[in-house]
Length: 425
Image (tube, rainbow, N blue to C red; front, side):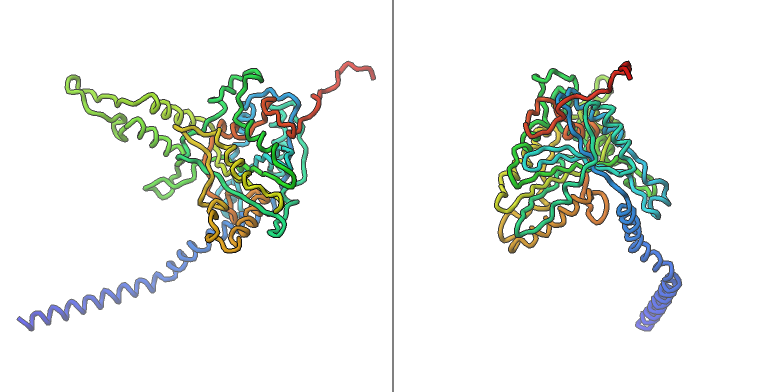
C-alpha cells in the first residue's frame, strides 16, 4: 500500500513540474506581448496628456469684458439661449485628432469679479471663437458693450509675506440630476416688472459690491458641453451618459418602479392588475423636476472661488460672504451648491493640520495658477466637475436688471444706436 502511495506522489510531482514548465514557457513566449500591454497602460495616458497640454499651450485665448446697459430688461432666459450656443462638441475631431493630435472640446469661463468693490463680468474663450461669442451675446443683449480686456488674474502674484489668498471649489449637495433652484422657480421666465423681480443673483452682486480696499473676490464658472463618454457597464466599447442614467435611476427609486415591470406594487387579487405605488405630492414634484431637468442641454461645470487681499486688509468674514451667496440657488427637496470641504482651503481649519501655513500657501499658489490658466478639465489641474443644464447655468450667471442696484456695478450710461439712414450728407 505504501509503495502505491509513493507511486502516486511521484506521478503528481512529475505532472506539477510539467505544468509549471509549460506555464513558464508560455509566459516567456508571450513576454513581448505582455510587455507591450504594460507599456501601453503606463505610457498611453502620459502621451494623451502631453499632446493635449501642448495643444492647450499653443491655443490663443481672449478675455471679453461685458459692460451692461443702464437698463437691462432681459430675462435670464436670454442668457440661457446664449449658453445654448456655447454647448459645442466640436474641437475633438475624430479619434486620431483627439488622441494623437490633442484635439480638445471647447470650454469657456464665465467670471464675476470684484476688484475693491468694482463689479465686472467677463467671458474667457479661445481667440478663434471670439467673434462667435460676441455675435451670440449681441443677439440676445443688443445694449451691451463688449471689449477685449487685459487678464486681471495675471496681475496678481502670490507673496505669502504680503498677500493672503483663500479659495475653494464648489460641488452639488445631491446627485447631479437633482436640479438647483432656477430662475423659473423665481418667476423670472415670465419677465415681470422690475419692481416685482426677485433675482437670485442680486445678493451675490450686492456682496461683490461690498468688497473693501485692497481686496478682490473672483468667481470662476468653467463650462464645456457634456456628452456621453463613460463606458457602459458590461460592455467594452459602448458609451453611455451617466447623468441621464442616474436621473432614470433616481426617478425610478422615487416612484418605486421595478426595472422589468416598470411599476412596483402588489397585485390586486380582484382584478389581477398591479397596483400603482402611492407617492406623496412632494415625491411627485421631485420626480417631475428631475425629468424636466434632463430635457435641457447639459454642461460639465466647475466652480472655483477666490478671495485675495493684502495681509492687513484680509477679512475672514468674506469667506462666509462668498459661500453664503450661493445659498439662494438651493432648495431643501432638490439640490444646492455647496463648498467641497475635502479640497483646497476648506480642510485647514485647525492649526495642527498645517505647520506654519506650508500646505495652505502651497494650495494658494497652485489654485492661483489653475485660475489663471482657466484649468479644470485637463492636466495638470484636473478637478471633479458636475453637470448643470442650460437653465441652471443661466441662473447662476446672467446679467441682472435694476433689481441689482449695487452702485459699483458699472453700467453703460446711455443706450447706443445707429444713426438714421436719411441724414443729409
